[in-house]
Length: 483
Image 1: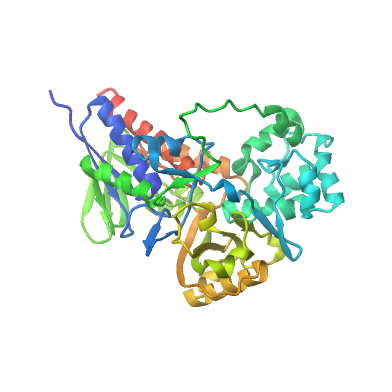
Image 2: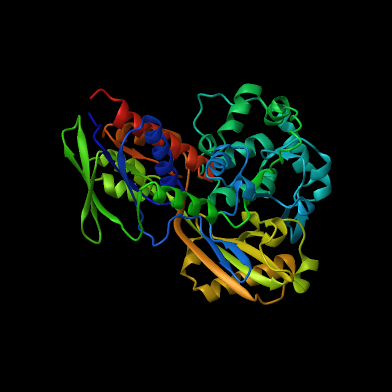
């Protein structure tokens, strides 16, 4: 007897939704289980914040420009899609990062592992910290570990307690801001850097913990090219989502762009429900399984009709708005002013710009010969006012910042402005417990799941990992239950 084909709808066509569909396709194939899957995306393009633009030999990224290689999920997905040969490392000839501190750019001190200092010399020579600040960082060896029973700490509290407020303000905060676009006085240390919290609990000191857990790396096989900390695709990260899209479409999965879900209804009994999804443009989809790969606030609105408590917890996850501006400059006019990969800016400097990347120096083939591609990052938690500026005013603001910080006075030849309103989930105090309660509540709706950057990691590998886990749970529900 032929098995009944199961129907699945995935709401959200970003990296989480596409990865979930791909994982579900793999799992169904391994079971030889028939199913129908539709991915519904409100935008006219798939990929979410992964948005690559190619024009006149220039490759710009609207969102992330790379992913971490220390987390294997993105590398593994590239391997499955046949993209491994297209992966490129950062340009090691320019392997320096700078920090704007006390009125000028200073080389970011080497010898920090996971934001923890393991070498004193580079800290001293950088001039970023005073001698007192360096000594205070070293005191991490002697400061007793914090009792586990005490209340959860913010990132500002955690790093200031372990390494001192000067080190936090001048070294660590700009890195945190670059990752989360958030306020370290709100972000949870447990949710954002759980491995560092665990190092303190286990070893009593961050420095001791990092030094103890360091292991010499085995030399790679001669034919294997070692990966740098970050990697990307030669043609831009958009090739990842394009390849996913092509693979899914070729397997018969329906990809509906420009289609928003207006409402989600649960049908049937609590023990064996199905779901009806009404679309904004009219019509509806029905399914036995639904994955919401949407921002927390979107998932909250869809769940509200039948689970107020889950919606309330989802609504408690705030979001920050960010902007990136990619600008092309004549290389002869700017090359003498820039070194390394770019710079970060501490909040203490009170500037609109939080970071800039010299993209054509960090990655090969990002701009034609004779041109330099620079990407600026603006906006963070509490600076949503920048969204009110039009593209011209935003570009002018970024150019003024580049002139003040790096001395660049040239006008750009070409500009791409990307706005991301309410795009970065903020893992504020209580986040891990909040996520536990969300998943607990959603699990009471058989066949319904949530996934994405709002829960257990905001990076591309994190989203892929959570999508894989979610699809495995849905597969078990659809095909492994007793009929």
